[in-house]
Image (tube, rainbow, N blue to C red; front, top):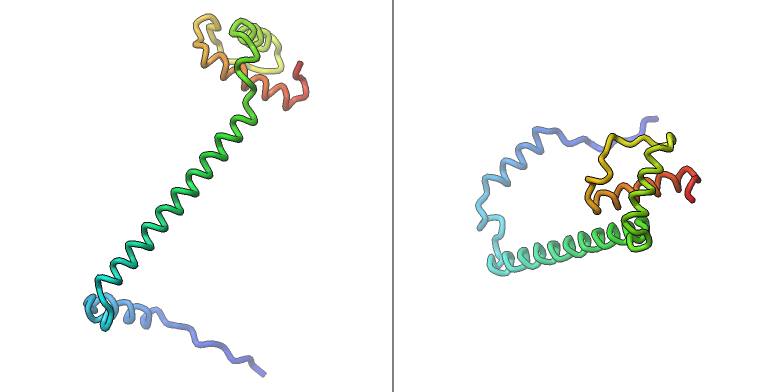
Length: 129
């Protein structure tokens, strides 16, 4: 016995249906409905969707900031001299490779970022002091 199969829609059927819908005027499609109410309902839905998307973006941004705060060590815990000494020690270590840098010419923000990255690398290797 063979199982009955649902008939498949042909692409020509879908194309003719889409063509018919596209050729209809707005009045024919919205026959019997108040156009102003339909437009108001659509505007309300779009505004609600925009608010929801904004809430989701804000929540995602807050989560990213929180993850960064959880991961990043406190910059106030080490002085700039300690940060530069740590980087200098790591550059001569051999377990990490650093591009040639003039440590004395590096900005404080760059030095602290590099310090943070080195700390994370060493913590991941189990070699943090």
